Structure formats: C-alpha cells, structure tokens
Length: 261
Length: 274
Image (cartoon, rainbow over all chains, first blue to last red; front, side, top):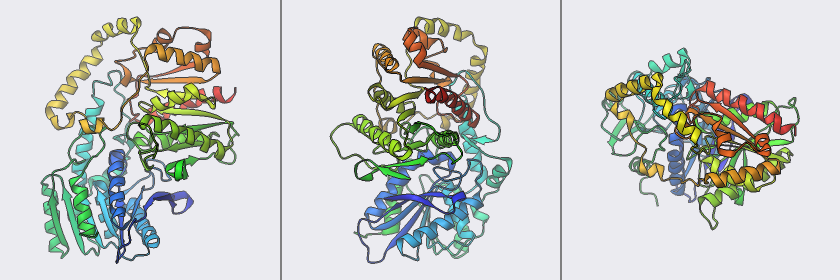
C-alpha cells in the first residue's frame, strides 16, 4: 500500500493506493468513497479491509479522504456535497493515472454513495457504480443522525452536562447551508451521469433503494439491488462500534471481480 | 506522510510547525483510541496536531500495527507488546524528523495503556497526557457519589432518556460483543499506578490527567487525584489535572475539543520551559 496526498497544497487530499498483488489480463481499478465525517471512524476498518481483499484479487484500489475530513487539508466545517463530488472526480483521475487504466469503478458507502452519484452527475467518468447501504434521501439521513445524537447526549454515562454545540451533527460542525444541502439531497430525482451499471447493496429491504432502481431503469441504466443481511451503518448501532460487515463486502468483491482467480 | 517501523509498515502523518512558529525541543506523539484510526474520534487527533503545530510543536499521529492503515507487526508477542514497540518506533521517527529530544505522549482511553507503559520506562518521554485514563474510588468519591442522588438535573436527564428510548428503541443497542473484543485493556492497580507516578515524578516526567464527565462513575471531583496519589511534593509538582465534566468521552462537541487543546497547550508550555 502506498500512502500520500494528491492535489494542490490548499486542498491536499489523503490517499491510500492498494497495489494489486496479482496481475489481471485486463487491469481493474476501484475507488472507494467513505461515508463522510459523521460515520468515518466506524467505516474505516471495513473500507480498508475491502480494499485489501480487492487488491489481493488483482485490482488497483484507491481510498481517500474528502477535503475537511480525515487526514485531508481543510477545517472540518468546509465540506459540501458538490465539493466532495469534485474530490471524487480528482481521485478518479489520480487512480486512473496510477493504475494506467481508463475504466474506474466506484464503491460508495452510505453518504459516500450519494457523493459518488453526484460526481457522476457532474461529469466524472465512472464505469460502474456500487452503492453500499446508500443514503438516498438526505432528510431521512439527517433525521436518523439527529436521533442518534440525542441518544448519545442523554446517555447516563455523561451525567454532568447538557452542552450541545449549535450547528453540529454527531461531532462535526454543520452550518445551516450544509444542512440545507443535505436536506435537499434525493438521489431518486438527481440527474444521472453516463454510468453503464449500478448495483445497490443493502442489509435490509429499503423502499428508497427500490424507488431509485425504478427511476434509474427508466433512464436505461442497468440497476440491480441485492439485499444481504449484514452489519450495517444504515441501522442504528452502538455509536462507538466498528462496522464489521462481511456479506456485502464479499458480494461487492464478486460483483466487481467476478470469478477472477 | 511518514512510513516507519519494520519494513515501513507503520503509517503516520507528521504535522510540522509553520516557519514563523517558535522553535521547540519537545515533539508530540498521538495514536489510536480503541479501534479508531489515527485521525481520532471526530477528527480529534487531526485538530490537536494542527493546534500544537501552530505554536511550534511537531506532532506525529500514527496508526499502531494492525490499526488504521498500518500492517500487523510480524513479531512474537501480543497486541500490547506490539503497541509498545510501535510507540518506540514512533518516538524515534518524530525525534529524527523534528530534531526534538524530548517527547510528549497524548493518549485517550485505551490508548493510555500504551502511553502509560511507555512513559513509565522511557527517559525520552518528558511528559504524558492521559485523557480518561486511570481513576480509582476513594472514601471521598464514595461520599460525593452518595450526594449524587439529590442532583435534580441528573433525574431530569434520566427521565428524558427514558422518553427518548421509548420513541427510538433502535438507538439503544448495546455494543456488539464482536466489536468490544477487538481490543483488551491492561489496567494497573492503584498501588501500581501510585508507585509508577512516583517513579515518573522523581525522573522529572510531567503528567496531565484529563477527566471528562464520562468518567463520573470512577472519579467525581478533581481533588480525587490527590486522594488517589497522596500529596507528596514530587507528585504534586509532576501531576496536573484538567477537569472537564462538560466534555463527553470522545469529545463529540467541537467546543470541548478546543477546550481540551487549550488545556494541553497551557500544560505543554510548562513542560517545554523546563
């Protein structure tokens, strides 16, 4: 694995490039999009493990942090969906150059799925999109995180103070503008980019995912849903838990690399 | 980015001061809390590193072997022993990169186990910050705890929590056994802790013990530290306490992260000036 930063000094983004340990007749490249600041720490292990597995099977894999998140440059309150979609665009270019391939598949987890779809809509060339427990409606996502934040605030382990900073969500600043942008997010009604195939993996049946598939299919995009019971960030979990998913990562591996040795 | 340790398998980010920052002979090492990556819960380590660097402290935040982006260490021993070796490597890395000769370790929760074991024996460690590290019940704790049942605000919170649980039972899941088993703790007895603190104090190592409101069932007043450790001159000089009852364990609130950084910076000046 090679690690470093790409982009200009004021917008340096951390990357980890997992180099394939076997060669494939037709090289593959996969970009992983993390779920953004609120679920970043729970998802890191799962995405690193998925990257390792994909690289062991012959794919070039790039993980990266959006501006204002993780190890990347920028304060924690500078992010926006459009800005992160631009980060995806640059990361795809970075991976394309590193792997020497033209086709890049993108896997987005939770909010990362929405960001990847937004990137495609803004013109990033993505061969295949894999959406893992995607955030399809921003309003629903915000409601879930608000309720989780309230549960943490009321936890009896913190009996002394009721301090909650204004304009924050699960530990990160979120301005009124940022919140409004998320509130308006609805993948069912966003423009589609030139994607040939979309696969949606969810850990439980999801009406929003089903609706999104129908909309995409009407647009002529080959879209499938696989429901695989698994650990999931889409279901409320103990907020300090690490995502230990197995079934969906295995299915993503099979979807992207098939029966390659 | 820096890659160091055996085969360069440990991954870290070195945050260096701007050119116009004061020169320091102290550098700082941050690492993992539980299974969090080097970024820290809610980006805590990134924010601390940038704050420290702005006033002249080179700061390395790194993933111990098997965590974050670092590979597992191929060596005999358990995870704790590997973590000690990782920390030795990190100290040497930041010394070489920064030119500083003295090191301060900053650790939260389970990360304290490794920082404590290192600070206890490594003369390069000039200071350590233990955030929600070790605390032990005392007679004073028990007396204060009894009075806790009269706290009206606590009762109100308990009622609100029950209401919230009734509305959203799905958010009250317990930690998964599998995730909890990903790491284990090595916690010293009070006698061992007291002895080790005295050894560190005699050696001139400074300690900052930070306690948040999450530690309320272990420590319920800043004076409990003196009740635990005694009031010997060496210990009194060496040990400082930052009492943060309005912070949660992982510093979810940005304002509490800023308050933590400010407390550590004030204390760092006393270490750096020595």
